[in-house]
Structures are given as C-alpha cells and as structure tokens.
Amino acid sequence: MTTPNSDIISLARDCDTVQIPSGTRTTLPKGTQLMITQSLGGTYTVAPNTGGLFSVASKDADALGLKVQPAEPQAAKPVVTGPVDEKLVWDQLKTCFDPEIPVNIVDLGLIYDLKATPLPQGGNRVDVKMTLTAQGCGMGPSIASDARAKILTLPGVAEADVQVVWDPPWNQSMISVDGKAKLGMA
Image 1 (cartoon, rainbow, N blue to C red):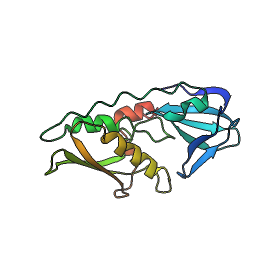
Image 2: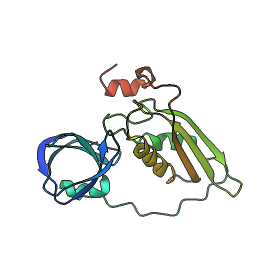
Image 3: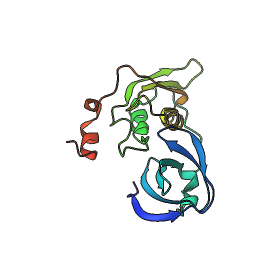
Image 4: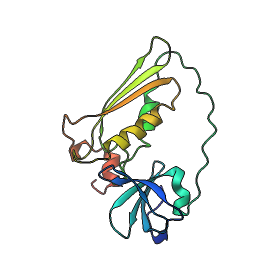
C-alpha cells in the first residue's frame, strides 16, 4: 500500500478515470492538480483540487508521476485437473478494494458466496455473489469487474462470474476482525 500523499501533484497527461462513487468513466485533463489519497490493489484513488474522488488504474500511474509497474510475463496457466483451490480464489479477492475504503472486499464482508464448479471440458467456473456497502454506489460494476479479472488469472479457472446482490443488506457487523482493526473499529 502506498501511504496517502498530501503533496499536490499535476497530471502529466490526460488520464482515464472512474468517478467515485458514481462509477462514471471520465478523463481528467493534463495539468489537473490533485492528491493521491489511497493506493491499494493496483489502483490509485485521487482527489483533484476541483473536488470529488476518482480511481486511476495502475496502467496510468505515469500520469501521476509514478512508475508504471511492468506487467509480469504471462506464463501459460498450468493445466489443473479437478477442483480449483478455493483458498487461492479467496486470497485473490483480498487484492480487490473499494476505492473509498482501505480494506479489501473480503474483510469488508462484501463477499456473500463463492462456488467453484468443474466444467465438463476441463477447468473450473467460479461464481461469486458480492454486495456493496451502499446500494447507491456506482462502483459496483467496476469492483466486480476487477474481482472477475483477478479470478480469471488463477490456475484452473476457465470462467468467472461476479454478481452484485443486495440480500441480505450489508452492515458493519459483517466486517472481519482484521477489517475492523484497519478501520479503527476494534
């Protein structure tokens, strides 16, 4: 995790972002003054001096004056016969974050269900049901897409689907002990 930076920086180039919490895709223009408020799970949350919060993908770190981390060489996923290791799926989901909250989606209690099913043609399908901390949050599709993409990188996973659901409604009692400690609630 990168510690929030109280320094004001200027965007080095136009930068594609996702507005928080609406989930609207937008472009912040070159020269926009902003602060990095959070860096977790491969994305940056920034606060421009004009107001609002925006999520910036790691591929656009150079616009923030940061070094873009080169993608790891993509080795072929090993062929896995039999069920996928669900612990790996849970660990992968712990790399996904709500851009407003410095706790991963597992420790926030947002994952309601995870099922891995072997496919007849080989590999596995992983289905996840997750929720958000608030129904009005437009970041749901973005967070679900991030989770799906990360699950698909795992050995033995051929298909993945992440659905946002609202039943039961999320509440703070669903946050793990680790999550509560990170939020100062323990």
